[in-house]
Length: 333
Image (tube, rainbow, N blue to C red; front, side, top):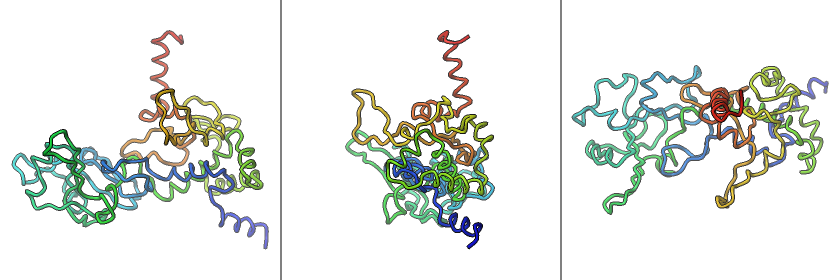
């Protein structure tokens, strides 16, 4: 077999987890999943980012559109009863978008006790939805919290168990990424892990054989996929001029141990099941509806506290805010 064929055979069997310490390999794998979600919400808990997308009616009317290739597993628009009904229910509003049809790609979503009482689905002969693909099997879903009143109880209808489509109806629109993008970002994040300080020693201590060779194979694969543009990675604050992986906010080099060790907890606020690590997935441009920012060259590894500061604003806006705070406290000229 020629060297070229040998290389091809290697890459056929290659995984982005090749040679990585187990805890870090799991961390890279989880980047393809959505964040956690409680049972009393409408969202699915840690599923693929390519899952069915939930779009608020307000976002749909504002012109939020799917990515060019569309949503791989479809979408469902959620309208609150006030958005769906006219002043005299059960008539629907005349200005509802023409491309939405109740029970096909639109559901009425009950979220408050007042909505549940005023627009109770039994008045219209409605059933809770149980499918994520059209037809949706019903016209509504509900996540109405309990109250202190004896007469009130928690109302959870639609997508609550295996018989109704599983927990949660879908994912937040800003978390979406195609399977192709998920795969590419995992390889690029693995590429970045191999550029953290101490990763070779950590892999060797865990019994991984030939970690340098594993790194070389991942870098070769990323070159084939167009994921190793060091200039662009540096421009996007993901690596430094020496090619080391850095936190996109503070620009300090990321240590391999920070990807595996749990964040230090404040005294008196300790929780026994904390799984947050010192460094985690970091979106340089923040996640927001209609932009789909979970994509290659926008993801890096950042410190937990830096991530908490920049999560909703992204790096640039966060830096502007930090400069203002420093000026107000006379810490900079």
